[in-house]
Length: 211
Ligand SMILES: N[C@@H](CCC(=O)N[C@@H](CS)C(=O)NCC(=O)O)C(=O)O
Image (spheres, rainbow, N blue to C red):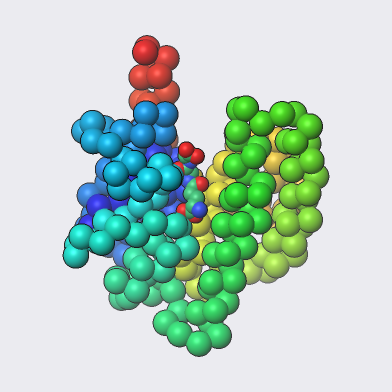
């Protein structure tokens, strides 16, 4: 399968999940500015929205949206036990994937990372995000993972929390979130994905500077 990604973007969650599962995949880097892959093909032909991630399955189907892709990977490589298979536990996973995707990824971090967003809107976003982070902090206190064991929700939550570095979100204010983030960072699949994507990110920034 092919994972279309941009370095350190939300697509890193799927890279982590693939590493956790020990799955083979081709990683195709997308330039967020030009919407072209590193090989020069038009990414908009894969996902007309130009958003990563997208996954092309071995059957040639293109899947978009983090929550769908992460569950697809967990189901395809079920031995990795990255998602509960059914019932209330599966619904609980979907609850957390939705929370991470809507309340944290899209409502909090994306506006804070948006260079064109006005300062007033960033201040409002940050203020509104506090209740979400406080909720997460209460939930994570005394827990090792989002669910009872590592799951694709952890891959996604780590990826999103990692953006705090580039925003005014100071995780030290939410000790359980900060300690969760630090623990996840030590996990081999996470550390490997982060090191690789950080190097690719730096290369990309250097290319932008040189252009
Ligand atoms: N709803 C999408 C959102 C994906 C998304 O926000 N991707 C960002 C990277 S984290 C992106 O590709 N941004 C590029 C752009 O906005 O042009 C999902 O959950 O997969």
